[in-house]
Image (cartoon, rainbow, N blue to C red):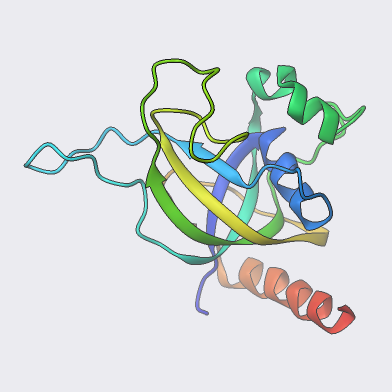
Length: 166
């Protein structure tokens, strides 16, 4: 792999995803909006990428994520001061990207209940591996963006060690 594809996600959502390595109730869906449309009016997915991605913690904090009871349960006692920012904290396999049905009601369960929001794109994540040592790097807009070679090497090196330890 030349450069690791990464997704920047605001905290505490990113840490809720990183919990998938040990908690089956953790966040396995990343919700994204894509306003792009093809010439025929059909929506364009936010990415065509499938496969390994780095989960990068943005430096911005999501107040909605902090108030979410599912996140509060997963990350008991952790705050914006204790959650890492500006680092790759995990990797995952991006296995699917699909548009959720628009229900008009945020409380109505969607196809990816309980983490998928209605009316947005669902990035379906699997095989999450939390990194023992988060790797600092700048994030970027775009989905996915590519990490530098040294960051990629640091992340992949930790994955190799984690695989040996299994």
